[in-house]
Length: 196
Image (cartoon, rainbow, N blue to C red; front, side):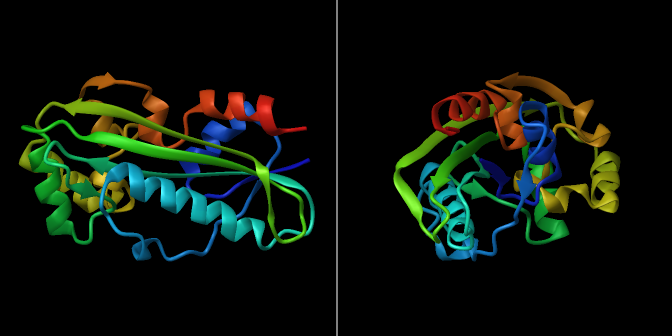
């Protein structure tokens, strides 16, 4: 059965490759802004499911589709996705000296029949959370992060893997792969349940 990762994320592809050596990547073309930002759990579930359904509609062969969506939720309930400007990224990075961001990742697996629709009895959905505490970013480090462009491509304006961030990690509560966007334990479980 064809296995598809419905994401353009390099990090998600790296995690997937550790579990499934051969898979295809199809980046779904959906407008994520149409989903109300009522809660981090709700929006990530809706986006992950919409990505899989968009891919399923294009297929003419059986497949198992994996999609995910990650946002950062703050203590006040506000949701941070990718920053809309460098100034917003700076504000967020400064805020992490006082507040611990929580990453919320919804992962969806959908087994499809290959006739432009999904087999309704074969899907799995998991929502996982993990938080990451940073030591304060100095103004100089924030300037480096902004100049590098890294902050603009990540929910909450941060990533664990980049050296500009990794030496500021104080603590991680939960699965680091949840922060990275695709926990491999979900992939293992879903492959076992849905592949054949």
